[in-house]
Image (cartoon, rainbow, N blue to C red; front, side, top):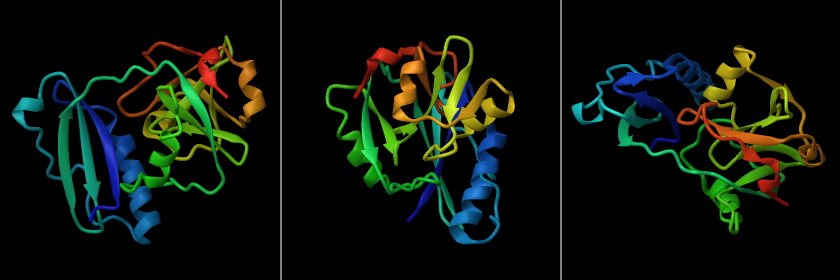
Length: 198
């Protein structure tokens, strides 16, 4: 049983932003198990030859003493619309392998491509990515995400995005949004704010 995991992007055989994943792994391990990790996330990693070209998703599932590596070639999913869905108690503060509650929210997407999760009135994340909103000048991300993603952390440190308290009524102040995670950076089309379904 592997209760936690990390997903990393491998581009043409090169691991991208691995230190951000190592940092979150260390924090998540300590939070979940109550002690520092006895190993490094990428310790002993070898990328198979058939995954040295193109864009590859590396999934590392782990428990208190072991890890498994899984590679798959990756195609970016096109997201053009999101359905707002609501929750009160959902906890996804670590990258848990068990996603039953998230999947239940995703099942409410209707004809949209994904969901935008509202927790206790606050905008959080989509089902699998952090969100950033554009007001015409700057990019903002909710300061209460379900999961503090590695791409989000990096963009905050680079001051490309800023944290802000976002509620449903604030969405009308923005022109569009993007979904960001290890596999989706800022180099993608903006989703118009009109494509949010209430």
